[in-house]
Image (cartoon, rainbow, N blue to C red; front, side, top):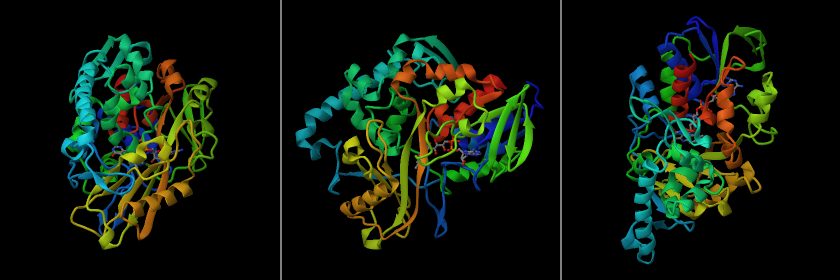
Length: 461
Ligand SMILES: Cc1cc2nc3c(=O)[nH]c(=O)nc-3n(C[C@H](O)[C@H](O)[C@H](O)COP(=O)(O)OP(=O)(O)OC[C@H]3O[C@@H](n4cnc5c(N)ncnc54)[C@H](O)[C@@H]3O)c2cc1C
């Protein structure tokens, strides 16, 4: 491709902005980033309260966030935020220590068994499922590994491993099949409570590409990154550093792809491009579920695009930011394991106290409203349930300052995963002068999306 090619990028979140950065690094600087809202960062949203920033979206990273580290280097910033500290409560609001044998004498046999299974799980991931952790999903359904290793050098890896087909199974089934069902007790904390769905519905591939063994151990040992000015700051810095900052408040009403060109109608004006990278949602369903506008709605989506993208489902992850009276302020952040089961859909799963030194600060609460086999909990009901739960936790809210329910973690289910959904979409990359990136192509976290943009640029530009 000519380095002068005019490239449109839809979305000014981590995927879109890092696509801009990697294009620039490769010598392409004729790009435009269209962002529909009035800020960059997407689901990295860090509003201000009393001179500090709190997190309504992404909070943390781990040391293997190599693409985020690329961005930090590019911008001259670092992960300088407050150390994360957490504890556990049961659904009655009592503090518990579920992994401490001395505090759970009756559970000792289970805890010992779990410890053994975690060790075994680590071993089989490295052997039987070698290649499980590369970024993206190419070849997995066919029993191949084809991607870039999660290492600082991100070496290209390609080999056959028929066992990888098991990654299409729901994570619960995958664990049971491998005699490691108790590892779910460890994986569930940073998975379900972080809004990524339940283990009986979500393919193991998603769980393990995000929570590879090393990353899970980083969560266990609280070896995590945060940013003082919030995760949004990472993307604000990148936006400021790019040759072409995102064009905010861009309302795209039409995209037409014909004769090797892409015509985008934005804020009423038609712009011409040679290539298009879409990092915004591809499909949002019937419009009754929060987000109303996906790529298939405003673009001249072809039949193969429509057929494949209509298989995408997403989570409705609900966040509230509240203040409490000083005497009701939580001492620390808490996980509520009892509420991470689908029978407790819509309940408070985790709440986050960001600054250890302040008690006049936002506490953010997190709940999930969907499971594929259940009736969705409405946004209003969910918010009410969470406020009731905070009372049960002995940390009642005094005032709700902010809330959103966000289009979160787009994914496909096991049947579509196993029938090669990803390889079909990967085969379409570039077909209509269009490239698909963002969360659906890898996983819904900052690093996987930025890393996928890196790969996309590496492979096609
Ligand atoms: C509550 C919460 C907690 C999270 N915690 C973490 C965490 O701790 N660590 C972590 O790594 N990740 C976390 N994440 C996930 C992380 O924020 C996302 O995976 C990441 O932001 C995805 O980047 P993206 O660019 O693919 O999508 P997004 O961040 O969603 O960005 C997409 C952008 O596209 C824009 N857009 C949409 N439609 C259009 C359109 N038609 N035209 C133009 N622009 C459009 C949107 O406005 C948005 O700015 C969390 C997210 C949430 C909500």
